[in-house]
Amino acid sequence: MWCGILQPGMFANIVIFDVNTAKGESTFKHPHAYSTEFKYVLVNGKLTVDKFKHIGTRNGAILHDPEYQQNN
Image (cartoon, rainbow, N blue to C red; front, side):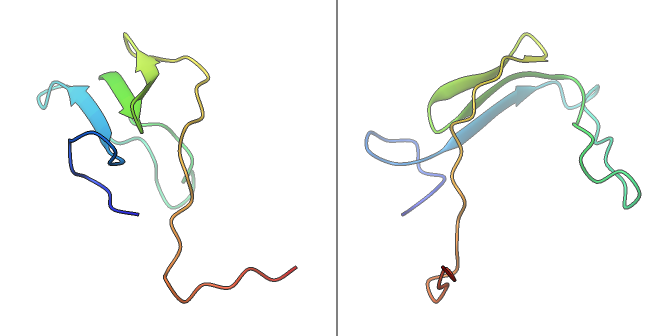
């Protein structure tokens, strides 16, 4: 799977933000805090953040190393 190329059939995430206001909120103590001021986020072509609010879309995928083996 190739990521980051904007063309049909490829996977890509797009983030639209103002570089002067966006900031990361996560720390080692609170690693799951969302960054702020991201106006729109598309994950694999699906709108995930709309006008600064996460709308519940979960369209991502876990990317594994080519040698990864799942233990069942």
